Structures are given as structure tokens and as C-alpha cells.
Image (cartoon, rainbow over all chains, first blue to last red; front, side):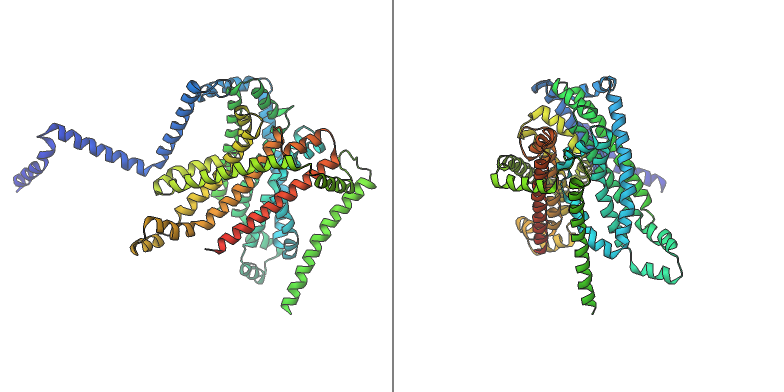
Length: 286
Length: 256
């Protein structure tokens, strides 16, 4: 019995082991290709990474071979210049100041936007009266007011914070209002009929329901504050980030310019990611 | 009865809106005329109004408006065509959507205005750098919404159309496009708004001509009343354009 079985296995296994080595290796290669394909199909992230690497390589080659080095730097040189950018006098301070403006602007935008959004969302009459005005101002391109902000608040951090708040506060109000509005009236009615106080309703009904929209508002508000602060920073060319971008541009130091911008972009990505993670985490209870 | 109360409430909220705006205007007037706020910080609303009339009458805004409008139109058309083309190609297969959608979404979350100094270095202070920035910024909402629109068409619709013998073109024209259109229209509206913002912003930050540039010039020469008039003019134009685009979007949606 066993011998027959083993011989059967041997006969079926035979073509794979032996005979034509060329065909065999091609078959095995084919299998490897298939495995690689299946692996890539399961992990689109690797192909994404490959696409990014291809773009960087194309940029590197284009910048080294075809383009004028006064205007563009290959990524390798940008990376190498990061240290030099950080050692340029004043740059670390400017970055720190930008971060500070972002933090303060975001805190103010949340501190004003959240209560305003709650008040407008919970008051149907107030909402109907003031939401059109909020939406109108939200839709305005606030960048036309940028010179005014500088005239009112000076070229220091105050104007940048104020401009960041002006960009960040409206998305927070609008999302919080939408979140409160989405609350089912039955929940409020049943909570009240069970004898919940105003504070209890706020704490146990409205608050948990608002968390997802609250974090969505925080994310939109943060990107608004980022946009406002960076616009104002770039506009003021006598101090801060704007001074350095203008200087690097005028002195034809593209590697340093790219490096500085890469640092700011990294800062933006990290902040966005933190808020996005928080949003994801606190919205899970649903 | 209920309907009457509703109408009353609507009237009341209108009254509150108008009252709020009037109060704002009145306090502006009072602040400049009676409370002694410096005219270099806040000009008199009457003076602003006279300047606005003057700007509109002399047509002095026309050259700047032409520059801004050309830049904006070029940027938006470029972003629209490239975004929809790339979106169409990517959304043809689920796999490419999985590869590229997070990439586009990731770049979109960076404030792209940061690229402005690079574009100025590369394309100069003229219109080219503004067009490049406007195109880059509004490309992402268009491409993301195109991918979302075509990528999330109900499979049953596609299968049903196929089994009834629809050709590729018919499938595209009568199934995919109508199903994806609402999402794409939203993306186009967002792209429109951010392109306008990018053009005005880049004109404000670094430029040689255009409405944003003119406002900065007036601010630097401290002609406050005229500057307020220009700001009011630009804001009125953008609010009108945004309203128009929202209206078009709503109309396009109704055709589903």
C-alpha cells in the first residue's frame, strides 16, 4: 500500500524534477513572477512608494543634467542642505516662531469657534439668522484682506496669528453646527423625559455625538490656520519665513529654498497626521 | 397657523441679519467720525463708497481684472482637464485607485501655497508662476473627486448595462458619467474656489500685476479708502462667482 502510494507520488513529481532544465527554470521563473505579482497586488503601498521613488529619480536626473542649477536642485543636494539651512542664522528661530503662531492661532480658533458653533447649532433661530453670514464670510477669499491684517497688527506674530484664526475659525463653526444639527431630536426628548438636567444633556447626549464632527472641525480648522499663518508668513518679506524664502530666491540658492520648504511641509504633515489619528481614534465608539 | 409662524420666523431672522449688517456699518461710521479712530487704519465708509464709485466709473480696474481673470481661467482649465484625465485613467482599475488615491490625498493635505517661492524662482514674478500655483492647488480636489466619482459607481449598474449589451462608449456615456457626475461637480466647485484663492494669494505675495497686486500697492502707499474700495470690489466679484458656481453645481445635480 505504502509503496504504491510513494511510487505514485514519485511519478507525479517526476516532470517537475527532471527532464528539460530550461523549461523547468522558466516554469519556476514564471511562478516567481506570479508570486511577485500577487504580492504587489496585495500591497499597493509598495507600488506607491515605487512611484514616488521614480518621480524623485526623474527629478534628480533632470536637475543634474538638463536644468540650470541656479533654479532647481536635485533632491540629494536638497537633503544634504537641510543641515546648512538649520545652521543659517535666524532660520531655527523663524521655524520655532511659525510653530508658535500655529499653536496659538489654533487654540484661539478652537476657543472661539467651538462655543460659537455650539451656540448657533443649539439655537434654531440664531442658526437661521447667522449661518448665512458665517457661510458668506467663510466663502470669501480672506487673502484680499491680508494687507489690512498686516497694517492693523504689524509684521510680528500678532498679524500671522490673527490671519490664521480668520482662516481656521469658520470651518470649525460650520462643522460643529452641522454636528449638533445631526443630533436626533428623539434623543434629546427622551433624555429630558427621563429627567436629565441641561448639563446632563450636554455632557451625556450632545457631547458624545459631537465628537466625530468636533474632530473633523479641528482637522479642517488646523489646515485653515496653517494656510493663514503660512500666507501671512510668506507675505511679510522682512522677517520670519518670508524673509528667508525671499532671500534664498534672490540669491539663487535653490537647495536651501527647497530644504526650508520641505521642513515646513514636514511640519504640516506631522500636525495633520496627529489630528487625523485623533479624529479616527475618538470617532470609533460609533 | 404653523405656516404663518414659520413665515414670521423667517422674516424675523432676515431682520436680524439686516440689523446685524446695519449695526456693523453704523459702528464703522461712528468709529471713524466720532470715536476718533485713525483714518490711516480705518477709512470713513462714505469715503470708501466714493472711491468705489470712482473706481467703477473710470474703469481703472480693467487691466488688473484682465490679468487676474486670464491667470485664473488658464489655471482652472488646466487643472480641470488634467485632473479629470488623470482621474479617469486611475479609476479604470481598482488597483490603481488603491495605489494613487492615498498619494494624491496625502499631497493634498500639505498646504500647497508653500510651493509659491519655488514657482516664483522657477517661472518668475509674472503670470506663469500664478498659473502654475493655481493649477497645482486645484488639480487635487478635481482628481480626487473624479477618482471617487468613477471608483464608487454601483457595480450592479455596470453589470446590468453590460449584460444588456452596452458598448464601452455607451457604458461610459449613459452609466458611468451620470453616476459620477455629482461627485465630480463638487470637486470642480472646490477646485474653482481654491484656484481663485491661489491666484489672489500669489498676486498678493509676489507679483507684478493683477487685483491682488493692486491692493498691496494701495496698502503700501497708505491710500486706505481706495484700498477698501478695491477689497470690496474683489470680494463682491468672488462672492458672485462662488454663488454662480454653486448654482451651476446644483443644476448639474438635478439632471442625474
